[in-house]
Image 1 (tube, one colour):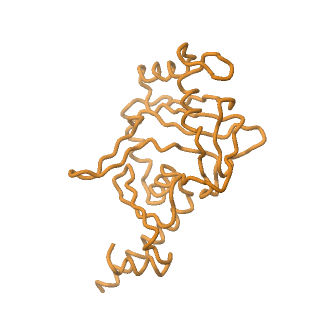
Image 2: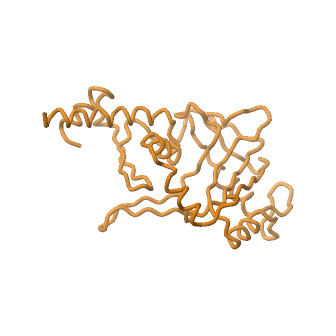
Image 3: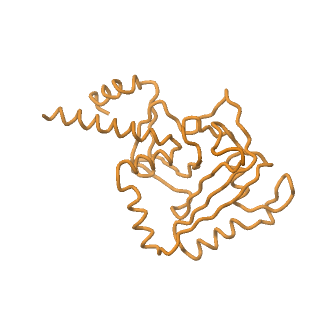
Length: 228
């Protein structure tokens, strides 16, 4: 960031010298977030234990082997047993409880209807940024609060061995692989869509996308004025 860009950020967002965090998204964009972290640990707020949680798994392609793989993940596994009932549970059931047993802080989000776990590796090496999706871009996973008395997640929450898990499966219909690829490539056709996607992937509030867009416009205007 140049000195002019730094001055613009200080004017509109305050001094950022002590709160800079560089984040590389799966799109290869390096973001500088100001005073925002995804899922920070919370020592002062007790996490609310959910009675029930819903895991949504989406198949992005209608491959036969992919469908069979998800079927296997959803079936009770004789090698995995609930610590409470002793009954066999599915791999996805066990994954949902293990991946959410530690406190999850969503207090920086105004809308908390969906929680998307971060299943990306983002590292920089000698050859540049390296991104890896654990689901290999074949599946998508997110969670919804399934408590009857809650319409969204608490600000800080977690699950326990007694939390009920409901697995919901969604898959692409009437689309072949080539159609799916085209559709995915067009998902982020506008800047607004791209910024909102970055928010969702990093568990930021989607309202931050508006601030980022305004900042980008301000930086572009500043640079343009320097050439006039």
